[in-house]
Image 1: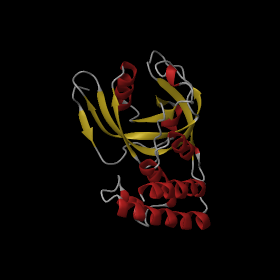
Image 2: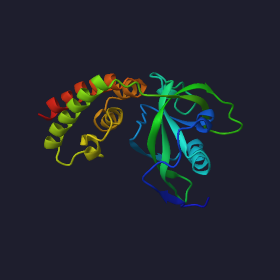
Image 3: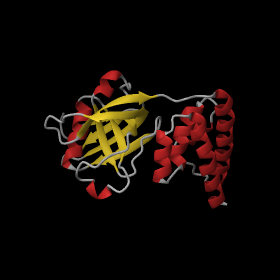
Image 4: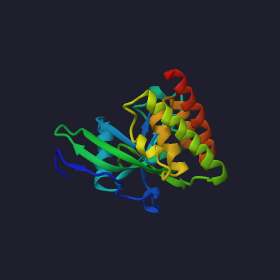
Length: 223
């Protein structure tokens, strides 16, 4: 791979399969959350995370974004403990700059729980074994809650004409309640603790209930 190497796409090119879960590269970030379906741009400048970007671009083309356990922010440059549940994103765009830094973009492809950290074999970054988490769906609760969230988002759109990322996808009935909850959380929830709670919650209905409260509070602020 040469300097200034660039690829750009719109969809993830790799699935969240067992091969990836056996050896998943992990990027710990203070307050970092990667929601399924959402797009997360990252600038990789530390030597170990330049190495991580290079590794991902050459091989798995995906990484987990893990949030630090609160109180360990001062150990960011070491190997601080991270929350056990995180989102995984697949590379959809990458560019290595001439000085070795990387600009990348990830699109979320699922939730996982990491179960153990792997031996590094000389790698600067962290690798984990993980298991996939699946949404718990309850259509009788999910559908009306999703409709309530969409109505609240329509009100937000009237007060913020510029909108936010992918608002059209949030408002269309074709977007499933589970994906709606994740995209809305990515776009409208700012508090890092609430964002982490939402990535850890596998019940679609419970995520939507939290969003009704969060977006309702946002509307009050805008009003």
